[in-house]
Each structure stands twice: as structure tokens, then as C-alpha cells.
Image (tube, rainbow, N blue to C red; front, side, top):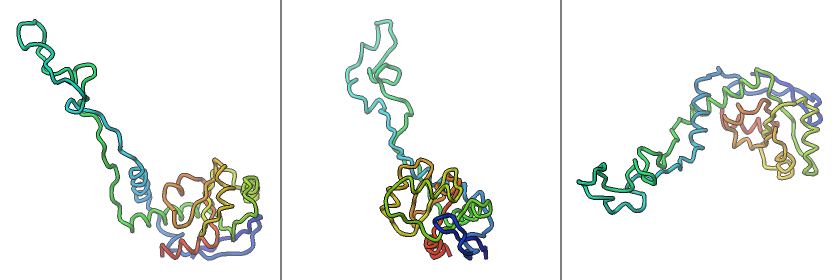
Length: 207
């Protein structure tokens, strides 16, 4: 069972915390993480690109000229794909890019990502994070005290409107609930900050 340091909001070590080995110390499966990330990105695609075929384009009901005797090539419609303003051949149509992935596989991917962050020393457990005012400056000071200079993902257990307002103006920081933890955010951000309650909530779901 991994034993890591527990920090205060001021950046001081205040004790130790035991993490569940079934969540934070699993065998890392890079292929599963890739599949889960690919699925999340695919599910986010709208797939709304649409082009008109010759049957969808307006007009073209009359034959441009008679079949024979003009010396020109024969045509049946001005909306043929070879005409300007005509339809599009094999163009994109609305489609669904999503594909299924079992719950166990998705959970294994998140466990692998959490384990990777912990082993790389990029996961920090904080007792709690709360501010009296929604000031972005307070979040910047918090990140500096914990020496988090690069992109940071902050995970909390319960919604805090003041904290949300304080974090949302930072382009290199993001705040999410533990219930919304996903593979894309974990892999996108360099550092991971978890509150003690968030750790308990995550372990309660993934164990």
C-alpha cells in the first residue's frame, strides 16, 4: 500500500496518507490508456460535417441541351458533380465516431494513469483547498507554495463555487470534481493535485 506525504494548503508536510494499492499502485497498461483516450476524443467529435450530393442540390431539373447534334458532350443535369455548383461525390455525411469500451477497461486506464503520476512524483495530496475570496492570485500563490510550475489539474470531492471562480481564469490550471475524473485530463496536465476527500471518493468508486 503506497504511503505518501500529506500537505497543507500552505505547502507544509503535515503527515502521511496510505493510498489503496488497487487504485494507485496497479500494473500500468499503456495500451488500455491509449484506447480509453482515443475513445474519449472520438466521443467528443460532433460528426456533423455534411455535403450535398447531386440529389440534394437545388435545381438541375431540365436537361442542359439536347442529347445529339450539338457537338458537345451529353449532359442530363446542371447539378452533376462535374459541373460548377453541382453535388459532391462521396462527401462527408453526419456520422457517429464513438465506439464502446467496457467500464472495467476505462477504470483500468484511469488507475494506470493515477499510478503513473504517483510514480513520477507528479501527484500531490493536499488536506483541503478552500479560499475565503474568489481571487485568482490566491490560486497562483497556492501553486507556487507547492512548487507546481507547469500545467496542473486540481481534483476536489465537492463543488466549491469560490474555488471554481478562482481557478477558471488560469490557462495552466483546471478544477474538476472527483466524479468527473477522466483519462484525458489526467494525461493532458503535468501535475495532479488531489484533496484528501477526493482520494477517499476515488477509492470508494474504483475499489
